Amino acid sequence: MTENKNNRDFELEDFFAAAKQSAPEASKTLRRKILYTSEQEYQKSKSYVSKQFQNSWWNNLFKEFGGFYLIVGYGTVATIGIFIGLSSPHWSNIILQLDENITIAELELADPFVDLSSLYSGE
Amino acid sequence: MRFDQLSGMSDNALLEAYANGIPGASQILTDRFMSKIFTQAFHRVLNEADADDIAQEAMLRLWRIAPNWKQGNAKISTWLYKIVNNLCIDWLRQKKIVNLETVTEPIDDRQNVTHYLLNQSRANALYSALAKLPVRQREAVSMRHLEGISNPEIAEKLELSIEAVESLIARGKRTLSDALQSQKSELGYQND
Image (cartoon, rainbow over all chains, first blue to last red; front, side, top):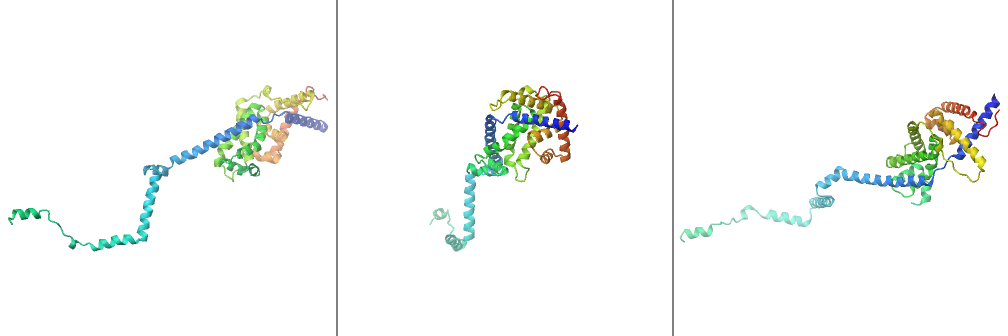
C-alpha cells in the first residue's frame, strides 16, 4: 500500500517536472507590450494631473481676475502699497506736510461774475 | 538616475520612481515580475496567448495604481499575485473548458525527440487533469508543485490556514494521481 503510494507520488513528480520543462516562457513581445503600456499610462497620468490643475478652483479664480500675470501684478501693487504704508518713506511726509499747510481760510474763491457786475453798475 | 542605481532599489521605490517619470523604472519592474506572473497565469489557464493577455492586464493595473501606491501597502509581488489570480478566475469562469490543443509546444534542441515528446505528453496529461480539479485545489497544487511556492506562502496568498493548504494539495494530488493512472502505459510507465 505504502509502496504503491510512494510510487504514485514519484510518478506525479515526473509529471510536474515535465510540465515545468514544457511550460512556455514569457516572450519578448510581451515585454515590449508591457513597456509600451507603461509609457502610455505614464503619459495619461501626466495629462490627468494637468487636467486636474486646469479644473482646480484657484485656477478658475485666476481666470476670473484676468489670468496669472494680472494676479501677479495686483499682488505686486498691493505689496508695494503695504510697504509704503508701513515704512512711511520721506516723500510721503512731504505730501502730508503740504496737506497740513492748506486751510479753507486761505482759499480765495473767485467770483465768475465780477466783470459783468462792474459793467451794469455804470462805473 | 543611473540604471544600476535603479536596479538596487526596492519594488515599492521603483514603482514610485515610475510614477515620477524616472526612465528605466518600468523596465526593471517588468523584468522582475513579468516571468513570474506569466508562469502563474499559464499554469492556471493553460494557454499561452491568454496567459500573455493576463500578464499584460496585471501589469497595466500596476502602472495605473502607481501614482496612488503607498509605501505602506502590501508587497507588490503579493498584490500582483492576487490580481493575476483574480484575472485567471474570471478567465476560467468565462471559458469553463480548457482547450489543450492551444497549449504551446516549445522546441528544445537539447532534448532528443522521444524524450521531448514524452515530456510533452506527460505535461499535457497533467494540464488536462489539473483543469478538472476544483479551482482552489488547482491553485494550491500549481503553486506548490509548478511554481515552487512554500505552503506558508500559499496560505498567505490564498488567505487560508497552512493545514487547509496541505489538505487542498493532498486532495488535489490524489485526484491527479487517480486521473493519470489510466494513462500510465501511454505516458511511458510500465503497468503494475
